Amino acid sequence: NESVEDGAGRLAAGLLVNLAASICIVFLNKWLYVRLGFPNLSLTLVHFAITWLGLYLCQALGAFSPKSLQPAQVLPLALSFCGFVVFTNLSLQSNTIGTYQLAKAMTTPVIVVIQSLAYGKTFPLRIKLTLVPITLGVFLNSYYDVKFSVLGMAFATLGVLVTSLYQVWVGAKQHELQVNSMQLLYYQAPMSSAMLLFIIPFFEPVFGEGGIFGPWTLSAVIMVLLSGIIAFMVNLSIYWIIGNTSPVTYNMFGHFKFCITLLGGCLLFKDPLSVNQGLGILCTLLGILAYTHFKLSEQESSKSKLVQRP
Image 1 (cartoon, rainbow, N blue to C red):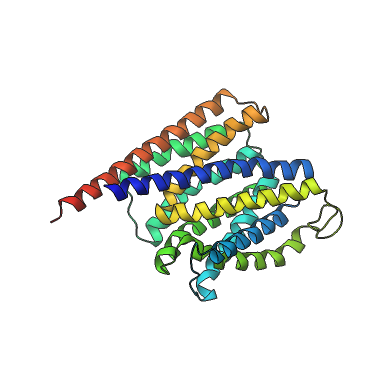
Image 2 (cartoon, rainbow, N blue to C red):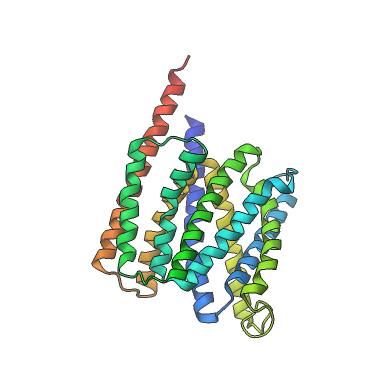
């Protein structure tokens, strides 16, 4: 039982790193967009470049050995990643935070559908039922804030579909190509950076005021680099968590982060919380707790089966 406890400890550490880094990055990016007006996709490119540099360092230090992969094998991942980043950022720009989060929470049900249809994976009924309070909670929470715009909804919907695909692929590719999270990201980061380089000029200024190579102050540059380092931690831990658990588990964890971020927004930015929002948060948290409980008992039973088998 040593390895089980060790694994659980490592998983808890991975989840904690992801939790801390993700929450920091939401507030940091919000600050960069709102206070400094730093261009959205350009920031993503910085994040990617730093992620790749970080991995290069990890590899040089012997944290992992790169595995040679065909570019074609990583292409769908890199493409879906770019789509996921571009659409979620456009969604964040053209929607209120509530709508943006509402759309993001729909990823879990969509993943369950994709995995059921495309990969023939079966989910027990009780797991499917926990998606109800989660979805309901997120709807409640965003309802009072939902200012519908057709364009915003289009971006949000595309974002959800691409994000779900991306997360399913991250898990599938790690198994299919027999690579770990670092090896996969090591190939995907430079590929996605190159794609973003082509996309950015269509959406954002590059030079001059408000462009990535514009006249930024030193403090702004430091903030951007800091957010890049945190993004590296987020990216790495996402891969690690999905590789070691499942896309659905990672997503559940995402809703939990969302609830914490909202509370943080309340405390830090003095965002008002309505009663409905409070109920929504509670509802989502209950769903997550139920899901976690079922998942853990499922793991326990499969372990005991393993033990009983002669």
